[in-house]
Length: 365
Image 1 (cartoon, rainbow, N blue to C red):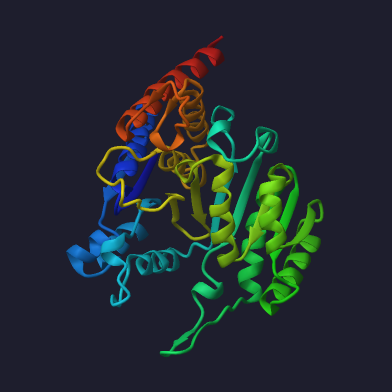
Image 2: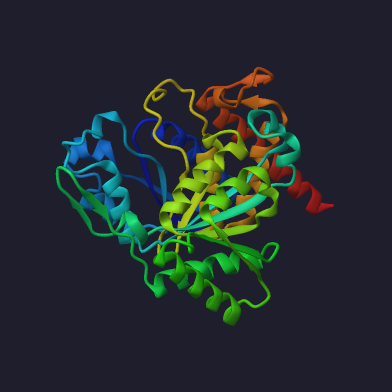
């Protein structure tokens, strides 16, 4: 099978972790005779340095012509000055808009081997398996803004159509899982949230009556996400709330470095780890690449329809963790082996080969 993948590694640790995701994709291609055309392009701060634009026209064309986009991370102190008229993050917002993607999927679970890496109690983490679906192109991040020396405003706007389409993505996902959907809003205060709640009710009632729908205020959701995370299956929410809550969910996994994401809805999907560019550790070969590798698995699942390949990568990650291998962010003093970025990528590649061989041997019996 063929797939053209745009690789925009970005800034900071982005190139380091993306290189390990590419390594695993290339290993998959070699084992299953896929043809993955991997096309690199500058994006974010590095693109600003080279071209004066975080999303140069050539990079955008590379992404639009691809079957999927694999992103590392963008930004850093060098490009964060308030005096800058353009920042790397503006390039990311524009890329999402140009790709037409609007639903950000962020799975959250706890690998049993990593329970000690989380600040939450083991009994709270037991059985956690949830997915956030965050609306990504509306809300306060895209609303009109005003600013004077003494006053500022950011307008939060949503249309019924924007809400309907992301709720449908979340509902279809919930139908394939435990058929439980939580919609998170602030309907006791905000009119946008009241519209969100009304539209969600209508879509689920008319199109997905088999689902169990619950509405939850965002402040309550923030509390319950830590107190009883196993009660969540699929949660759908607007842009700002989703941004905050999904970072909070990193406490469940023990590290932002473990979390992957898929942004879908358009012709071309965008796949990236949840963590940032971490400039303080960039170039030190100590970043955790597992979120980037897991994002490559999501790419295969959602863009290329390579479901078995995605499962093999995810199983390889589990095996590496179960064997006691950790990067520094996951080490609580009890790790058997603390690996550098490239070493961890190599271990996943090796485990992937064993997973594939074992599966093939089982089916050959």
